[in-house]
Length: 384
Image (cartoon, rainbow, N blue to C red; front, side, top):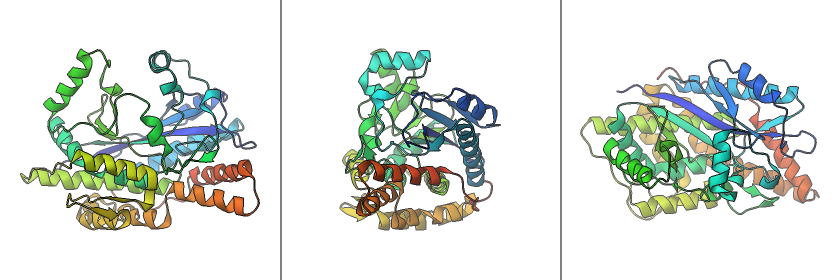
């Protein structure tokens, strides 16, 4: 089997521990200190000054992914605390207004703002992107093609943005709705080879829509910078163990699909209608979704039953990758609730206890601050 390497990017928000509001202009030393402490990992600026992005080092195992996530979270949290702030790993803040945020002074950010105006200014959300390196260009594109059929599952597991503008939106992932304001988002077109991808890329270049592949903001895409496939549909997870389990599922699915290709099998092509409907249902209902059946059999399946089937199918892959424990946690994310579920529960309980809307939303921020802190390390697995 081909070696699989992994890397994770997280987009974090900086908040005030008193008001629990976002800090629009945090002390610049937060980023400087976090970057200096990042070691082999990276901490970099984001489009808005109230956010920072962490980039893990290249990891050879799920255990390394977990260790790297803990390291990057810890250096950012410690830097924020040193300057009177806290960090949340949530794809939206419950009430902070994008109109109050400040754009980071970088040429590429200014260019994006000029080109896209409020479409990008309102892009006050955080995500988690997982890179997987394996095989050659054609193999990665072919596996990516099949992975499109599982995108809704990754979204369900990671939903963490039920609030926006001080209210419950009725969506488990408001972030997905915000993303659609930007061009070239959503599900990538059907592509099975590097030549297919290059053809799409060249069409965009020919009409002067983009400068390079990094401006193709699909839910999953070939990275423009690394020999990886980048899963981008996920909301960011406050709990590190959830992020690690999602990374394990991604790695196991890649190994499973790659092995089928190696045996000479042609991977199935999921109808685009099923992919798009699944994405919407995941965005709307999260762990309560009934998704189009992943085997293409027609009808819908309870997402809890679906992930149980998936985990059972991938047991041998998890064993080979040394991430059995991380993969086995996947069904519990559904049965116990994802971050969006927990945020809603805390909010509703606070209202029942007599809190007003702002007080209840502050309880939500307190929850996410606490969950963002790295807890005791779990045994995620051995080297891939």
